[in-house]
Picture (cartoon, each protein chain N blue to C red):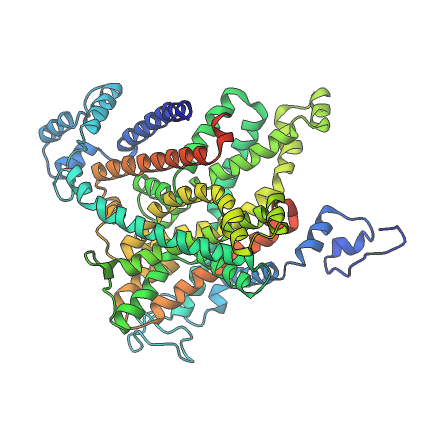
Length: 302
Length: 306
């Protein structure tokens, strides 16, 4: 790429257009990410979902908790796009409000797990020795369990409820983020610029935050997206088995648990909330796949 | 090989110790007084004190721990608060249904996952590949409880072919095993495909083709056999995943297994049952992981000497 050629691709991202031939990491990333058509569609879907969740009170055609005993367990119609449940509540409106819960639980739990995990991982990789062994052994033990079992263990202590689901689901994101951050810290901690920083007397805390943490970020971002999908699925499972969100809540898993009693009587209550979970989780997974390929082609599986 | 086995066996001792500590600490992490839970809400203080000493919860912590481990080694996990029967009996009745469900699900998932993975890899970039990978990615994102409900709706309610739930005949196995295995089949397919594609690039595969080995033999003997090594590890890891997944699937299909027992006991705060279940599940995972590592070392001599 010579200096004479201006931006080689007409990208819509303003930060790229402004830097003409200079390839910023962000511009490079966007250039590669744009080629992932499936991931772009998934990303668009997630943006719409986020918008719907935020503006649910304005978008939803009905009050999600308002019963209508004249319209119980109806199938999809012009008035009720996804039918009504056993109390005559509009299933479509409930799904829109449920998006708030699922997205919030997914985002908060992964943020919490990521924050704790990345901190532990960087500390573990930077200091090494006994601290490292201790943290990594705990992570090994945690990783050996399937997420839902760990989550149920936490729920058993804290009690059922959607707030506790966030902590329960966060726990099993911790070891994955810890391992990622530790790996990148180990590979960077003897880099020249880190040695240089140490030589001029930069504090350990600053080295970890400013010089080691950024190296871990690309992987962390990819896993962040993928973990949100898994976490939403686990949270919905917990609600379905009765340990998460409790019945009046329009949480998707709880809606399915409610609808289970009316299987064969009305399909709407068992089909649409499940479809919402599936599409959301799928979108996060596909989006994460695309991010991975764009951020680090080396990570790509075959 | 023997050295390796001994090393691994010694290695799990601290892990088992850690888990026993966690399970023991569990009772003390619960809000409220376990002795009062056992004695009942209307018990007199004397009764509660009597129960406390019978549970071994009145001594110093280390003594309580030894008491707990001693009992656990004899299979004594106390009495279920819900049914008032020994925990070990409750668990014993539920063990085999879960084991069978897991094994059946594992078998079909492995067979189909392998087939789809190999087909995708061989027909790389063609419709079979895209079809297989769409199934694989969807399978990972599919909520198992939703799949279960859809299957019940179609095959039990509408067609009347299969029972909605319960345990007994082979018909009872069809839907739960399919539901439980789908996610695993998806992971296996994806993983087999990438392992297969990688091995297919190796020199010895090219050599085999060059010297005129029939394509079928190249695929099944030269490539698949070598691709199987990482796949074995994956299978073991998926076993743990299945045991976790069975918790949800058993709830959907009213399966009388350990998973549903765990959910019921958490809802009921039946802590002796929860304790025993966590211990049991943990030991299962450790043993499965150990078995996988040993199998892996058996298949790949490099590991043994590290």
